[in-house]
Image (cartoon, rainbow, N blue to C red; front, top):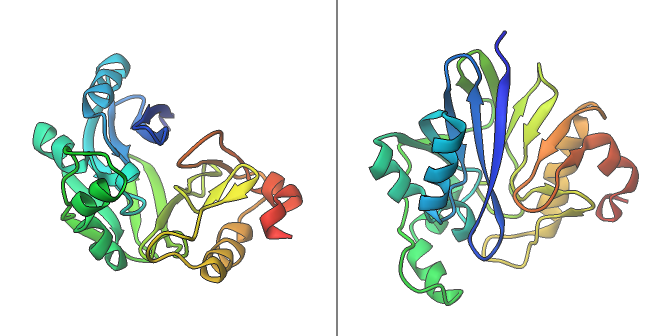
Length: 213
């Protein structure tokens, strides 16, 4: 099987990890969480030589989704995700921009397809299981490639931390339940990319993440 390639593009003042994932042989792939700075994302696309065929959203916060419509228009590709419970967030991105004092540029997002627990998304032969993991955002989803032992977990879990729950729709107990009952059921060897900062492994977080003790 051809390898899956990855590139992280930090975007916006929040230093959000917009992620390019693509199949090495075909070059086809996806853009995960284009939160803004679309020109920077386009530069990274050109540098890697990958061809985006879709946009995947983990959740509807501004730093993860605000550039999705601009990229969709530039590339004529679909926006997939997050879960429908994020619809109020995605339809309120322009208000989120005002709340954070970010001015103009953010656009409300209407996905072409909502995701559900148990769905499967693919990049060529690379299959990702979809897990609905609310708590940070009501409709947050994560993408898990079981064959590779790799996941993109957005803002659910971080290296040594967890997603914040003080934003609209957040709930600490729900987030801990999502992590414990879903992510922590994966093998220790699973590596993950998260929405901000460095990634890690499930085993490392199981052993040392202070929020999971």
